[in-house]
Length: 229
Image (cartoon, rainbow, N blue to C red; front, side, top):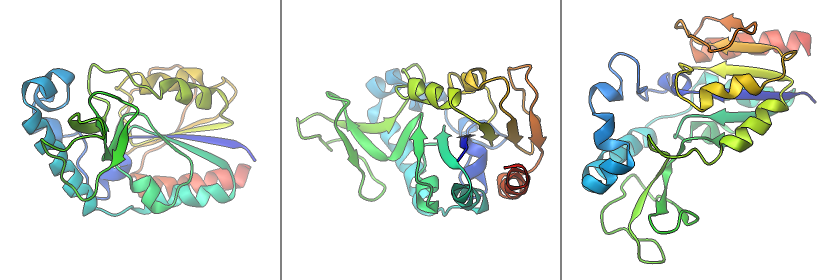
């Protein structure tokens, strides 16, 4: 089976009712990035940071996967699918995808502030001050904040290098290092982009564009890929 590597961003979850960060009306219009999504914010006001992510988690628990998520599960019948996601939600998992790499962390998990190897599932939607790891340290959201390293990027690069087909869905391709993954895809590998918006890809390679939202776009992608496999 061919290796189908798929990079997903906030656009695929927008159809499930989850706000994107950068589009009009998105989360960054309501919150200052520096106040809720940086290590400095955590040191300055951890209660505010926890409240921000509690709100996101509560919204996530009320959301369900959409046709885009389920379509990617369907592709596992025909390809060896690897999803590299910039999203921190668990909608890919809940839809049934089996091979997912989270670049920016996972909203429904917490981790120790003293030992990053200690990661825990969050029961419900709240993570509060006083919630401690087994070593007695405060738990923080298991999220890669702005200014922090992306631990899984090397794994994602290896995945991109092994792609037989590379697909980009619902991402602005403005957030690095994820946006740079396309540069590691072999030159002879076809690249597809699914997004209803104009997206500036920082690469001069040919890209087959499907100018649709994720649900309709993934359905179109399935038709095209099955016809050429």
